Length: 492
Image (cartoon, rainbow, N blue to C red):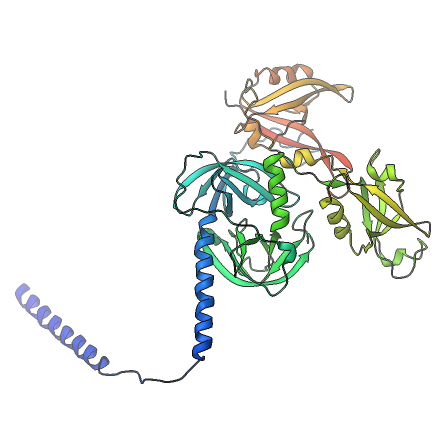
């Protein structure tokens, strides 16, 4: 029986093989007809081929500067909710383990020798670990040199400078101020983790305001395909390969590219990056005024000419540049250095990007009368904190949480002031910063004895802190304070 089955299968196999050979013989007997149709003229074809070769060459060479950035961080819920019977909220609830988050982005070399890489702040913000994959395939750890949330610019440096430099290169800077709509550009990056990807398009518009993407800065709009993972990658000119922008965001209902992307102009990126590298901070213009947009229905009650646009001053920071120059609450600012102010964002952007020490002329209305006032731009009070990282390697981890603290009096009660935060400690991962005040521990507010035990490292395991932090309003420089909860786990 078995032999008959085998003989039958062999015969069947032979039939199948013969049938396949017949089909192949039948198909190869047909040839597509030759055509002499000419799609483009030889001259046009040659020109298009040269353009294609040029873009391919630019893409290949500029990709040598491109890096894939991988980050990981521990997710922290800093702000809790309030229980009327529990002064801290979450009191008595078990502490859940914090999930680890991972993300991908892009960046590009501006100095291969020193290992400097530029990327977006939102790519590396809050990262516990940063890994960079280079164009030559090598993957290395990196550290943050400085970052500026106001413009979404950050600089990282490879931790070990003894890396292979073969196959790598840095990009040359173009002039984004000279950019015009219609210019051909190539966007490079790692969309969805697909490293060394390129897309071709044009500049759709220039001078787009912050558009709620960042507190400060103008953007280049492009139809070049930009997707998640492109953030931090370079946008280069398609005719010479010079970088003119850094891919930052997309406008999309689906989460994918829909032909509207935005890049930070490279002139702004370069200035911010240089400040971060050389000074460790970014100087930010400040006049100490809080504004509200001027609504059309207010013009009559404020005795303003019909059609007036601008901003209404609602609050002035004490001893700030605005107060010193004589600006008062309810003044209506309509022009800045001769340029009409059409939106709050426009006014904030001009002042915020101005260099401290520069003088600007404000045209304003006060009680219906037109006035001109000169204001000397000040240094925004938060400029030092903006560029700095909250963690410090120099903090002594004596208490198991990575904190150096001092006992101080605050509002006639006791508090702990954070002096330094050790890098990669539980306190650093939780987002604690020098200058923070600890007002309560495990539900006990301003308890001096408990605070002293915590400062000396006598408290173990997980604790819950009530923290107060000073903040600065990026739009006006007016400061305030906020309170939130932080959970810490001892490493001892």
